[in-house]
Image (cartoon, rainbow, N blue to C red):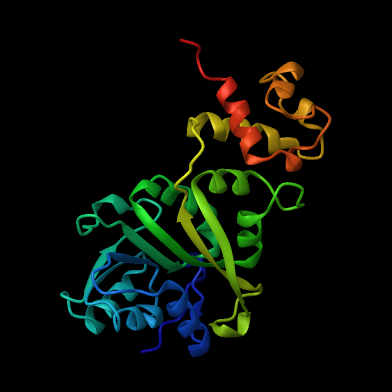
Length: 259
């Protein structure tokens, strides 16, 4: 029986063989690696990965798709975690000694940002991530200071990852086709993460971008003085989207309690 894509789960199934092959080549799965796929859907990508790996894990919310996966793959090939990826503990997946987890998936557009932030909590356990996302989201993720789409998502993810947009995927590659272009993003947890408290940085960045049309001095009024902005190397008259990750980290570090 044909599975009808469910809008509430944000389901758009990738069907284009050329695109699927390009994604697998970008991921380059190798035997012995621990890999988990988020939202395997109809298992188009899962099946290709399992041609290269003896075993992998998947996280799937849709119970109907879980049943399909159970029928399609033996347990020794595929471990299925039935549940919500937003609540899933990625630290529970066993990983060979000396290795880290590889994460892949065609992420539902309706939960992409929350899911990326959830996964960031496990960045220290992850080798890399390859995701299909809405192109607009990927452009925000990799945006540089000065870009119109540079914002909270850019700063918080760039603090944790080195990221690159690999290639664009048109709507025609899916069934049903989405209304927007998609893109493949590679995310590698940074080996040179700037020292900073994550919650503090999040608070600073959220406040800074809450009124992005105003100058940074007005955006963070009550949190920082003009003198503190200058101390962090920031022109108080500049706008939030021109402030670099390093400068936001410098601001957050000014809020550290003095011992």
